[in-house]
Length: 290
Length: 221
Image (tube, rainbow over all chains, first blue to last red):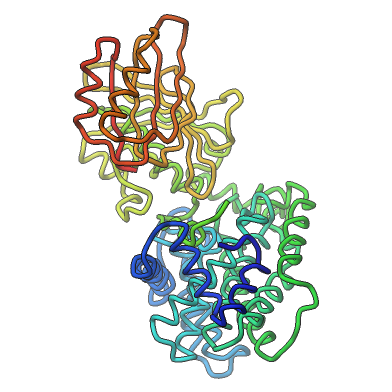
């Protein structure tokens, strides 16, 4: 068992194993499950993630109270264009992130990772990375283990609630989880996985939670897209050998403290940020008339 | 506190909100089991954030789904109103101001076939975690995390001892136990959470204790 990043990393280095190995051992000890049972659970989780990341791509999901109907399909169509700035792969990844957000808003089945509002990031990033790397299912599920190990530490020592810590605690944490996962999938060292998670969190330090009408839709969907990119770029920074000067445990603590410093208007109450703009308020009024 | 990876990657749920949708479905799902018999109508009184944003989060459909026995990951949840019509269940939603409760709280009044009513109050705490705070006037703190016995009994010396002896004899370990009463010497309520599934025979034996008024077993969480 580990209680912070330092302990998790130390054990991986001592045993000369990836982070996912340590996370798996701890999970088996904590829940008294066998390795097969843990992997069976992960397989089911990933199949739901895969479905939510793809089912709004081909056609929009209609829903009475959704402000984001069609966002995934739009990005999916665009992703085949060769002249886009990010290229087909990254645009497809954003489409996938949007797909989970759209599924969530349309009352479809999703897996909170770590929350429903941030549920698009881990699936989109891991799915896209797996295709890019040609990774098999075992590697993908190990990636999920590493992602959830990081997520568990942040849940334990800080927060993953937008109401408590802002968007940095939801989409930011999801990006950190995903970044660590794909560095391991790409063959990076445990230390590099940790660096990637640090970069991802540092890149969103202080991001507020300002949902229009208090609903998990806007800007949430677009933040799922942008934080997926954050996960990829943070992974590349770490794999290039960039070193984050601040240890991840301290970055997590800083994120937590920053969240607490945010006024309540910027923590999921829809009283600040884009939710409190005249147009944001008008959209809220219209949606509750329906 | 150690956290399972399936608490980080989870819950698996129908969107959009773990507190306003998944938690709401769980509240009504557990309340339905507390009621324990057929009912024809449920009135939902919504407090705080539930009252303000219930339409956009599908809290209304989630509550009806739970009352119908659907769980938070059941893909029929969005069609709960249609399902309710088919099953002849009616329902209503009204705002209410409750004192000293969590922001996401619902008071549910179940109207039974025989004209009786059950009133259950509960709150959604986030991440699909819930707490039932009141059952028919009895204050409680029930989280619905493990198999549970809900007992009402006469507030007399030795009754609790009789109840726990039955469980001990059947090798059922008590995890959490909460006893409360309205007035001294009147009716009391006892909630026992156990580590194992509770076999139906436990209910039968407990009901044979003269001072025990009612027993409900909740195994499906």
